[in-house]
Every structure is written in C-alpha cells, then in structure tokens.
Length: 272
Ligand code: BTN
Image (cartoon, rainbow, N blue to C red):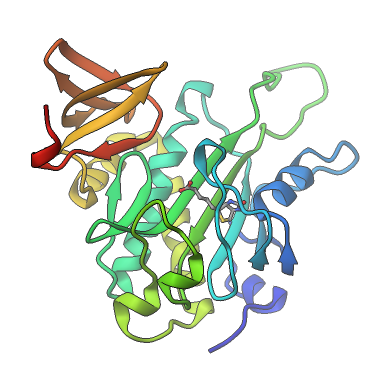
C-alpha cells in the first residue's frame, strides 16, 4: 500500500491534480478547497486537489455531517471550467459516472442513486458534493480577464475501513474493504478516480452520452420514490432523466421534474 504523497500524486500527471495539498487531519477538505479557490490574493487554479487522512468536520449534502475517520478517501478538487452557467449542474452527474466507473474497475459494483450517491446493494459507499460559487459573469472582452468561477467537487469514499467505523446510524453503509474482503492501494483508487473524472468532465458538452452511462449505472429509474420538495412530500415512480439530468417522477397528480433534493426508495409494503 502506498500512502499518497504530493510527489506521487503529481507524478500521475492528472489535469485534476496539478496542485496538491495533503493533510493528516483537517476539518473539511471542502472548506479548505473553497478557501483556496476564493482567496482574494492568489486563488488557486483548476485542478487543485486537497486530500485528508481524517476530517473532523466533514460535510455532506443538505448540511449533514460526514463521518471521516482514518482509512477513507476524503478529497475535494477545485474545478474552473468554461461552462454555460446552466450547464454547471452537469458536473454532479458526470462525477457520479466517473467515480462509479473507477469502482467497477476495481471490482466494486456501485450503482448511482439520483443524483449522485453511489451504493452497493442499497448501501452507501461514496458521497459526492459539487458546490458552485454563484456566478459573477466572466467578461467576454474588455475588463481584466480572469479564471472561471470555481466549482468545488468533494468526494467521500469509504475505502479501507469497516462500516461500523463510520458510526452512521441513519442508513446502511458499506466500504471497499467490506465489499472486496481486502484493502485497496489508495494510490490505485485515486489514480482511477482522477482518470475517469477527467474523461467525464472533458465531455460535459456531450451530456447525452454521460446520461446514457448514468442510466446504465443507476439504481433509481423504475423505482417508487419519495422526495421532499419545498416542504411537501411527493411520491411517484422515477421514470427517466430530462436532457439536463433532472429526475422525472410520475405521480398521481401528473409528471413532475425534480432538480435537487434527496430521494428515498419506497419499499412495496410502504406505498400508499
Ligand atoms: C453526501 O452527502 O453524500 C456528500 C458527501 C461528501 C463528503 C466529502 S468528503 C470530502 C469532502 N469534504 C467534505 O467535508 N465533504 C466532502
């Protein structure tokens, strides 16, 4: 097993790891990457990777805590991509496809729960958090040229630890160790994640192709699900994605498109 070092990561020559910071312990790689990206004096460029052995204040979607003990892969990447503002949400699903493919390459058959959770047999193995800074426009001409606004892509992968180490009670979780029956070289999984992410992020303009792969890897479509939206709870059958990746839900009141939120699978005995 090779513990990742700045040198070994840089030697991967990934466009997503041109600048690398590694912390034994940090509050949150996401917060650190955000600070680095927004630092007024010298904001870091695209492809800045922040990695931590332990996070003491890891954050998940919807403001939840993210348990991050030793053995996981806790990382955030600063992305600065020339994208139409309306295309920024594509990063979420592209990242899920990239990380899922990396897991399949090592023999972990991860499926995507909309929009970007990765599960194995219904147990969460990886969470992905893509946070954009709301968009000041990039001047097309005149003014001082500057880099595109950052998106911070956070990935929390339960790797070389036991599910109980995560101390999660709200849902079932799993880890690479538990799925494969052995640990994985952190450098190997990191290399595969960076390669696959780079491939997916490089084809964001061909989003139909990414969604095609998302559909092949998902465990959401065809399921009955419940979603909280603007204070109301909606139930229906998840039938497909729109061309921009929103979830199409068939409810008794008609077809609804869900752009964000957390869905919950309804087991047959629970359906009303
Ligand atoms: C989710 O809720 O599923 C998303 C979890 C994202 C966790 C990762 S771990 C690395 C990075 N740092 C954080 O504080 N959060 C993200």
